[in-house]
Image 1: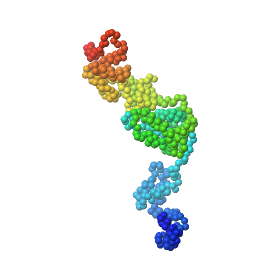
Image 2: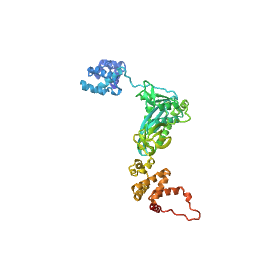
Image 3: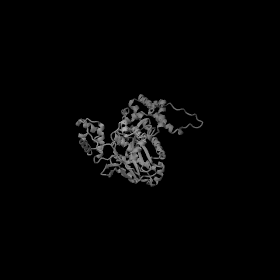
Image 4: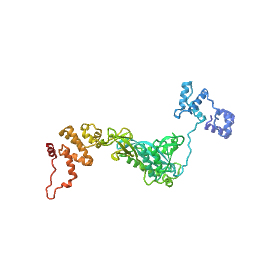
Length: 498
């Protein structure tokens, strides 16, 4: 094979110095025909064979072709790879050739087998203000010092590329609706067509072709905002490739480094600002920025309704023997008097409200996951007062004790020491029940003052709370000497003498 330097030598020697082909043959070692072809025109190297002979694969070509054709009937994830073809040939047929030889033939054979399609995509030019794509992504954030797995919702305009991202603790239907509501407010309108994958929060059942049986609540939401929902073919996420790319872009740019925030609301404020800043970006292949394209697009969007969607879910439940109601695989407490009673539940993204005979009996912050307990200790105090021995092991009390001030523990010990275990606990529970009539700061101040004053019964705490609340009625008269605070330990001794 002639190199460029050899071609240069032959041409120069023949044309400039007049050397003959015979002489050049002796000097270079190349044949006369090779030198003649090179002198006639540009040298094109050797011409490849039209029919490449495969001596090593010769007896195995039909076997390979049969395996690849049979693969067309099998699931895509259970078909032969080139390496698997090579391994089977070695083990089952004693093949002695190289793996690269098998790989080259498998690549060529697949292109000739009927039904094979390469991964090619059609360049699109979306209509202005008509379509947006929806998807969810997963990331991590440090919230209040805890590394938390979060879900983030993405909506992207196909025309302008303007996008909206919002984070949630879950991917439930209430989160999906809430994300849509915030996205519509961000875009100041509704895209006529929204494109989804077949998420279970929207699709109840995938029918033949493009037909889908929708979740009833999603159908109501769609009807309220008057958009058309279009769903991708199963397993064909590239049909909404713009938002698929946005998921990765958001994770790499908005979640790196890992955000450290105090709440999900703070995280969403930061992400929202990033979405606004993206407006100055110019997408590859376009002349105008994202915000300039969106300014032309927004007039084609559907106007927002006068009131946003309520985004609540109503259903019935029954209180179990632990005075809890199971909602979404988690437990929420109600007053113990409601045990065994049917209740109504109003579920929103952030709260769980429970009604008994149309009266509100409990309101909890919603938790996500499985087998979590949201217990309000005030729901159990009345029952614990009747069964004081359960105080030490009662789950709602144990969770509360981890948070309350040290003065509470000190006062409890004094009550038990002065009155005995059972009576002391009952008296202390009666003090805790006062939290329902006074604020937490008032109660903590009163309990601390009662302990410092030597009080050993709940009457001392009641006296301090009552005096503080009606202080103006006991103000000293003008000209009279002010009276110092009484020693509450004397009051307790008088109470004990009766």
